Length: 224
Length: 370
Image 1 (cartoon, one colour):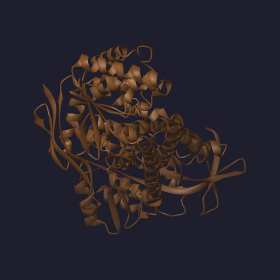
Image 2 (cartoon, rainbow over the protein chains, first blue to last red):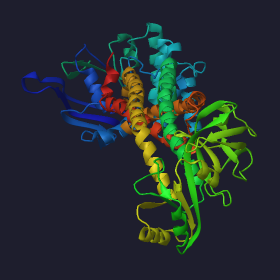
Image 3 (spheres, rainbow over the protein chains, first blue to last red):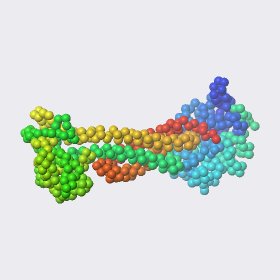
Image 4 (cartoon, chains in turn yellow, blue):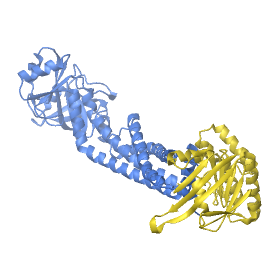
């Protein structure tokens, strides 16, 4: 089942002679449970593509269809709901809230959907346990290692049971061992939770987890 | 949202404590200023409010604090008006009390009709009420400051004849005001030592039909104003608002502005520092409304903490102030606290606006920046 369809997606920054085509006519299908890895040099348009799929940036033209719902023309006011319920983000910088513990960070998306306190807590702890962080539940981000922070970030991305996980260089700030653990756990959880994942990375060591590998250059996508 | 907001402001405890202390001093200043205005008005209207009269007759265009002079014969004229139940003269003259060769500070001695007690002291701290023309009651703080006690024999010099009249202090009252202290004596005694012959300062009337009596007095007597107790209270209130109100209100406005700036800077700085975190919240699906609420909640938490500290500080300030400026009364009651609490919340909401304006501009794409 196709969960995400991109059709002739274009993103142009600037106008007239200053215009830069960051994403150039990309079409792509992502199936449920599939992991797509996109690699490419810096400035090739990977993050721009991820931002558009994540409803953080509007495309200049083309369509983004998530589970038969064309969200391309949605106003910002409607897109927050898509981001909250259908998309999970994993960032290179982890982007955890420094004043919150691991569990509280994971809880945020569920709190935004007004679930019951006990359910939120239980769900967050369950995910952290699955990611091997049961002893780090009450720790602040500054007390966690890079790998642990990224695992907290993964739990946060998964807690709302999104359709699509978008990961931006998730292993870039990790040593090879931590990177490997994080990627293995991510793959396991993505398959278990039945969501799809698009991962942007330079890290060739993690290519084996992908169902498909795409290469991006000058805003265009090539299949390896 | 509550836990995120609380954790956010407590994340930098030093900044939180400094902001709470700063804003609590501002709120204390507001409380103290309002307490001073209300206290002064309450203190200075206390006596008039306690007088059991429906109407006050005073010389035309004069007021409670000016030197109203009315002929004593007017008391009899007013007594002839229908619907007048009771008429009494009231004298207020300033004197110094002599005791053991020592002359006290000036005190305004109120001469009232001791047979019907209209215009007499409302609160006795100790002693008894006056029962004859040789007994007086003085304010208890005045007595303390001038080393006078119940049963002390004092004398007052009649300015007309230079003859000393002797009196016994029989009671101590609660009758201090910012304009001076009040003492009480019989109306006849006040008449006999007054420098003015056959002159009374005020005429007090009890009636069930004040409107009619008022009209009747205006019809038969010229050169007087007939005021209700409420009108006199309003006059005194206006007087004190004129004397200190504008200054105190100006101080309050300045304090409110400084409060908004202090809390505003703190929230703004915290927002700038955490702009990426706000970006993350937006990226993962938090609506702007959620983030505004979080900032307002942080601001209100600071202000509520500041208000609690301010209650203690203002109580301490008013205690210290009344020790050093004993003629002033600072009134801090529940209504004033509630009113200032509302002002405090308003400061909180206004101070969060700058931070909110900044948050609106945060682009969630910031999450992809290193």
